[in-house]
Amino acid sequence: MSEIEKKICIIDYGSGNIGSVSNVLNKLNLNYCVSNSIEDFKNSSHFILPGVGSFGSAMKKLNQSIDIDKLEYEILNNKKPILGICVGMQLMAEFGYEFGKSKGLGWIKGNVEIIKTSGLILPHIGWNSVKVKKNNSLLNNEEKNKDFYFVNSYYFNIENNDQVIATTEYGMNFPSIISFKNIYGVQFHPEKSQKPGKKLIFDFINSN
Amino acid sequence: MLKRRVIPTLLFKDNVLVKGKNFLSNRPVVSAIESVKTYDLREVDELIFNDILASTKNIEPDYNMISEISKECFVPLVVGGGIKNLKIIENLLRNGADKVSINTWGVKDPDLLKQASKEFGSQCIVGSLDYKKSKNNKVFTICGTQIENYNILEMAEIFEQNGCGELIITSIDNDGNLCGYDVDILQKIKKKIKIPLIASGGCGSYDHMLEVFKDANVDAVAAASIFHFSKMTPREAKKYLFSKGINVRN
Image (cartoon, rainbow over all chains, first blue to last red; front, side):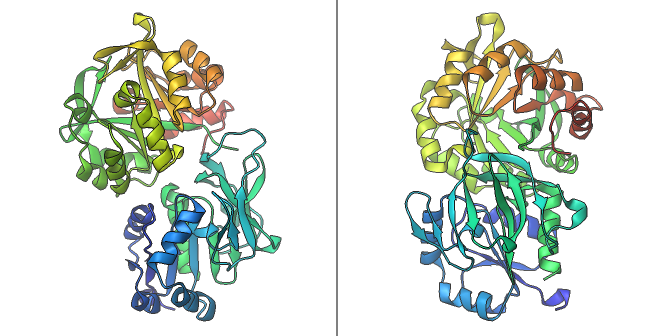
């Protein structure tokens, strides 16, 4: 796909970090829209699912704001690449356990559970290193131990370890980048992680 | 492992950034946007942006300004000044702030902190406290103009109990004097509270940062004058700190 045809859809469901994600795409001169319309889903080549807040309330907002079947058609049938950010990534799980059990999108097997911190304070907030385990199109080997900005109390306890691309340590090792076919997710906030974050978003768009 | 942070503080007044001494006689620095662009290039870990007019004149923050700044800021942005209700916090977050720092109105009514952390999450509620060592470590509000009944240690605990996610502690006596942080008080506060502690007021050299990281075990250092009025930069500060064994992002 040539540069000109790439159009990114930031999925609009009232998530707090939509503005910051848009700011990065502006800086990168990428063609994007912030939308929840089926028409824009059809016309987009890439998707970003942002997210802050709790699993349950984010999933509820997503259900209220978009036609999930239509989005799934683009992702699961048409195989368009999608990047989930923070809670946006967590929503791809089967279930979340933040403030009670809630059903997720179920695109990737596993559940979202509280970080077992061994006494460290939650939320896990600040710059932490992301250790790359597997070759991937988001972070290359030279950037093996880059720091990214995190704000989370919960993590994606993913069933299939092969889908974990990178991990981060905070009381325990948890997945910080995941990928399964055309679906990608990052637990940190690339939109607030300066140069390495901008590069990650750029690489997601350009190598997929 | 979480990294220790180096955070420039920007004070904003009438469209320009200023920096004073002991919270007085503010000198203009440069335009806010230009300054944020420069800091974004210098790989700071976070930016603290305080609107002085909003707090002293009891007016709402300049939301347009915050929105413009956030377009150039690709690190977490903390905004403070004049935050006295949940509506203001919501507006700031909507205009691009990642966290808000609450000072005066949190001291006057700690319940504001409790409500704010419940509504928006403790991760975005930063408590900010100013005190004077020369006045028995009493807390001061309204940009250092009003003395309060509590000392800094008592108030730090109250802020933590009411749900702040982090604390910024500023020594008014040391502010702008480049004489080093008040390590003694910071050590005492660090022992009392669990939430991340940001040291502020008095930084004049990279060694001052090293000292407060090592001796008070703070989680972050905030600095203003050193970056505005000298050739010292956050990037060089972090290189130095890293070389001395402090776990900073580099």
